[in-house]
Image (cartoon, rainbow, N blue to C red; front, side, top):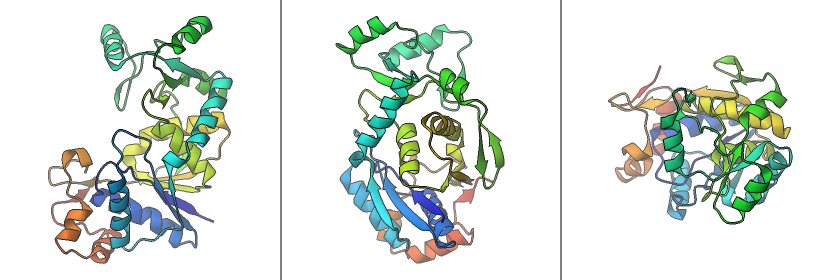
Length: 286
């Protein structure tokens, strides 16, 4: 049975790109008699707001979408801690005491700093700290937990993932470098939480935008070293604005709530999206 999910972060209102993704995930399950789940990814505790959760629910109902179950990540922290404990016990996670400023200086001083889709990789400053020094610093300093991606890749060996649109994709395990698993002020990173939840909720098909594709390299690596199942992926085209920019909350993309207030019909918007017909001023990136 196909099980898909829509997993927004409650840090602002949903926009047309979210609607496009939610509809595809919803229809992927419903068209095959499967289950569609709503997962609120609120581990960004500094930006998540209850009113945005209520807005997400209202937006999806306005579009005519229903879900079989809803979960909230802030209520599932024990699962993420257990996964982190396993990685730590296996020698695949290490504490990182660096501040953003220290990391920036380290990267600037390096002539050959590896880069990923989000910029320079963390230079691994804390990876080589001895166990005694680590314990001493952990007792007095704030720290994050990072994945030792190189060691994880060595143990996992060659990996691939299956994408319904792109086919079989080879995993490049160092794409995101030593990514954060648990931040100094965040109970679990997006990468760790999404992998744990997809497995715990028996997600068979992950439907999301192609902008997330670089993260899939890291997600497959985490799945491999944690012994978690591999879902099928579907990285769909993105919705762009009139200037060719990807829709984003931080760029002030018009929200679905704005359209509701204007009196637009959600079912009509959903129908147009299913037909590949975007409102004026929007386009797909392909």
